[in-house]
Length: 140
Image 1 (cartoon, rainbow, N blue to C red):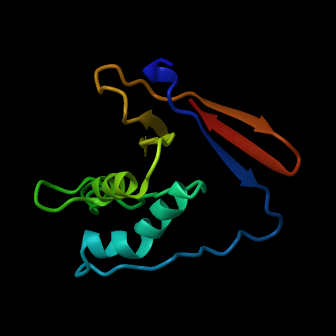
Image 2 (tube, rainbow, N blue to C red):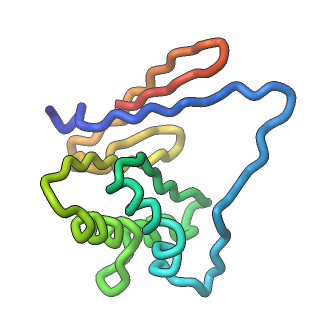
Image 3 (cartoon, rainbow, N blue to C red):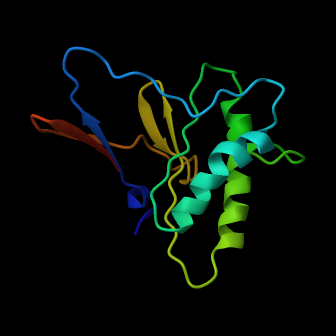
């Protein structure tokens, strides 16, 4: 499989009539809480469930310079969500295990695969199929 075709993500959007659905959050963290606290409360249970066979997504959203990259990647002294998740995955698996990971960025309505070398990176193509009840957008 080539690096350009290594990632395929499908997003399903259900059509909602009349009013938008309410916005639900798991938790809002304060500026005083650490990335490790965020990881232990929100991401770690998701990582454990993915090793048990469930799909999981960790999505960082916010305005420019709000700390999304630092929270996800961390620094040399403070690991972010991604290094903590990778460490937990490899501590959790016991036998031979197939692991598929995507690491994407959506910036200015462009989807990029961050696992491809930056010099070879191209925006991922977005394909849509429209159905009366739901629509799907696939990247890859």
